[in-house]
Image (cartoon, rainbow, N blue to C red; front, side, top):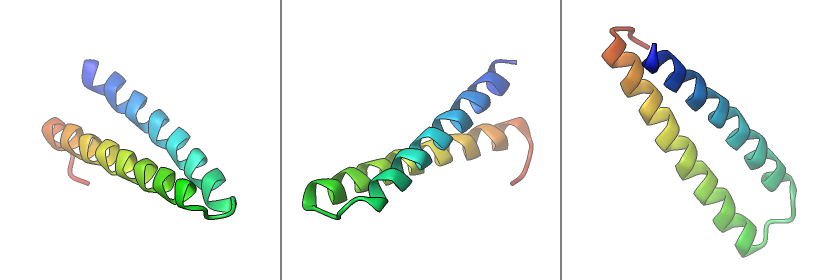
Length: 62
C-alpha cells in the first residue's frame, strides 16, 4: 500500500513539474530562466528514476 501511495505522489509531482517546465519554456530565454529549466529537468529525471525503481521492485516491468 505504501508503494502505491508513493507512486501516486511521484506521478502527481511529475505532472506539476511538467506544467512549470512548459510555463518557463514559453518565457523569454534569459540565462536565469535557462538555469531554472535545467533544474526542473533534473528534478524530473530524479522522479522518473524513482518511479522506475518502485515499479521494478513491485515486479512490474515498464
